[in-house]
Image (tube, rainbow over the protein chains, first blue to last red):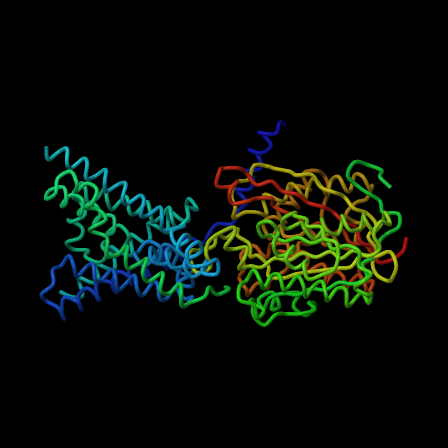
Length: 150
Length: 120
Length: 335
């Protein structure tokens, strides 16, 4: 048996042996935590529109996201968000709060290496791709739309 | 009707998050990849015009997940192209999401200064 | 005396005359809690950063081991130490407070065996009289280097292991009382093309198998000749794989086989596949195993920590994870 076959056989054996995440409980948890975070967002949005009926729907959403981002950032600093994340998995990663957590957690973590090269540089280790992908894709969409307009 | 609204928010939001969890379990991908994937989905959905259709009844259920962030990128760039033409391609996306990104960076900076990472 | 390729018989049989272990609070609540010399109240150890805490743990462990061996610190000729951080800073920075020559070694989680093996060979050759060996790892420093920030809310996959916060140290000498190191088998780097960084047990198990096979073949021994065969941090999954691999090669590992990582935490602590990191095997060896050897409950122990020699750069470039494993035989009775 040559080296490649041996490695292939071993990888096959390991992937059969590896313990699987208990899928149902974690799916259920991610479902209700994710749903709850969205409901909290809707609640904040409704409250903003209730107290400031003059602002547009678009800016009410912006305010809502800012509040959610603030809450997630604060919980990250307190060391609570990762516990929610351990419990809910996708339920706390996919909402905008997960984006906030992925910026805040390296900021808190790498403060010891200094403000500039520690905190500010490492802040985007996880969230950087999100911003890059967002900008690139929006430019592509904009370009396609511009061609259609002409 | 309020209750029905929130039920839709809960169901749609929960389902989107659950899809994320299914991806994590099935493929072991990391959170950065999940975020990028859902964001691009949002951009795509908005670009083909499906997003606003779902957003009408799901409201926060699709706007709070990062899908909504992607959608506002696309919405912003399309609006800017309409008004500004070529320059809008480059300014529109970030302008629409500036509040979210700035808030995330600002709060991360403030709380990064205040708090210290804890051992688990 | 060198008989075979990998195995060395130490004819002067260096003795382990002192050992010391220090662990974090979570580890103190684990299965070996009562055996550790010192359990820290918090992971920070009154320091500003976790890196500094790890450094202080190494210093404490070295001082503790020298203290327990009852020799004058002036008689120490060499310090061999290693840890998991980049450029092994914890060990090197800790070494600057001591007045000994220093050798930094890196064998990932197998560092304890590597430092002890190198030290034992040096002492056996009578070039150095007393050698201190030390290794440490810290959960919070390893986590940020190898994986994600501590506060990031993501789930750990079920095959993941928990890096042990702890440091272990021992003093090797030709004079004095203590268990003796009789044989050393140095391991080769083995790579079976495992790419999953969350599954280090599977990446290291082939290395453990290779070293174990060579050791048994060279020394003409079998698992029954040892009171305890203990691997470093294969974890639950890895040790099961090792048992299967050895069975394929016709050697049955019985109840005298154990794995430090697998045994480290209690079930209720919910640590997935168990402990890992070089502190894992170092603290178990320098507390529990040394105590049993000193009491002569164990007469012959095969200690073989395993190491996964990965770095984030290599894995991000799509490389697989090579493993290494060194074996040391410690005997408590003169034969």
